[in-house]
Structures are given as C-alpha cells and as structure tokens.
Image (cartoon, rainbow, N blue to C red; front, side, top):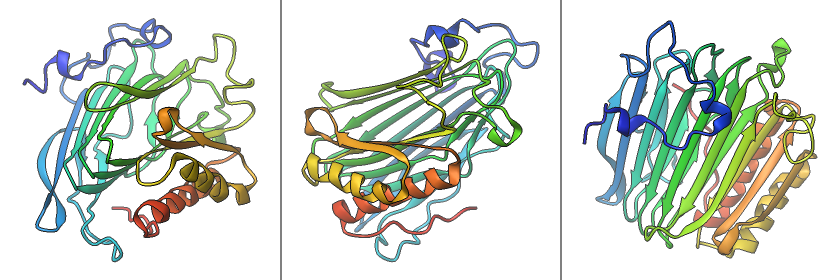
Length: 308
C-alpha cells in the first residue's frame, strides 16, 4: 500500500457543496509536501494492558507517546493527536486510521481545536477510519472544529465496531470565530459519519450539511441561533440502549442547554446532541455526558484531560 498515493488519502464522494469549490491553488498544490497528512495507529492488548503496536505518521499529523495516567484505569493509554501546522488550509488532504484490537482499550483526543482557514481556490478534506475488535473499548474525543470565514471543509468518519465492542465518539463545531463576529461566514462545512459491523452491515449514518449560501443554517433542524453544536455517540452492547440514552439525558439535564438524547438505530447504543451559545458551557455538558456513560459502561469516572 502506498500511503502517499492520491488514491489513499483522497476522499471519494465529496459533497457537491464542497466539491464545487475545487480549483488549483496559487500556493502549494494538492499532494505537495506538507499538504498531505497521514496518521495510522494500531493498539493491541499485551500483558494486561493496551500497547501501541502500529504507528505511521507523516507531517503535519503526529502524536505524542501514549501515557498511562488514569489511576482507575492504569491499563488504558491516552494518546494526543497533534498537527505541526497551525490549522487546515486549502488543498490539504488528511487521513487518519485507528485500529483497536480484541480486548484493547484506548482514549484518543486532540491537542486543540481544529482551525479551518479561509480558502479561495480549493477545499480541504479529512478521512477518519476506526476499527474496534471484539471486547474492545475506544474513546475518540477530538476538540471542536472552527470553520473560518470562506472556508470549505469535508470530513468523512467510517467506524467499524464489533458487536461486543464499545465506542464513545464525539463531534463538535463552532459556527466560526464567534469573538471576531464571524458567525456562519464559512462557504461549506460538511461531515458524514457511517457506523457499520465487521460484516459490512450498516448500523446508522449521520450527515451534516452546513452551507450558508444555500438557504441559511440558522433555522430549525440546523444550528438555529446557536454558536456551538456537539454530538456524542455511544455504540455499545455493554448496557441496554434505553439505559444509555437515559444516562445521557440525565447528565445533560442540569445544564439547561438545548439538548436531547435518544436510542440509536437497531438498539446499538444511544446518542446526544447539544447546542449552546458558547463553547465552555457546551464542553462542560459534553464532558458530563462522557463521564456518565463511562461510569455506566466501565465503572470508572473520566479523568482530568492532560495537555502537552
């Protein structure tokens, strides 16, 4: 496999709202050095704890070494995903692949919010694939994406989960640089999440299309008047789906935000979506939801996140 071939890092089926901005940048072209980020991580259970057994990275994507700082879960590594660049630029093509083997467990987070800069001649994409084996446990909790004015971005996340495994995954975004008055000034912010079983059976998909010029994004069923949106998906057989949904609902209720939780299709777990005016209140609520499902599923609270 040629990790640096266009076929590997290029996302197929880019939404028309993003693809229509395709062009040849007058800066570095697509595929140039620094414009392609590739990160592959594999984790396996060895000797009673989870170890990083596979690792490939190409700048700007990279990681810090796994750390084991959770006293209540000492066998679980925490891995910080990092970018050596300041953010995502036009023509950038990123791909990240994570594999969690049978009985392994890992927490993946990011160093900071993903800043998506102004784009004039092209767009940027990111492909994330995650595979979790039998009895595996994976948390993927990246910081929010912030689409700057005139940015065009598409992210596709493909998650393959064994029926006995658990995945806790979050996705969140700000409506722009709110403190600078850039609210929904991006050209297009689009994402797709597809979750399936190892045999290829689709469990569910979640699609987001925010294109301000195509009718606005501030009405019902989109962002409304809010500045921050966050989702938490819990795919698990570790507890009944209704119990997971109730746990999410109870954790979010005290915050007084616009939020809801429900069972996922085929009773494969539950999910919650939260809207708020600013990121601190939404982040706090999302952390409370993560903590609640963690206590339910593995019997320990969430640790305080450590930054590099």
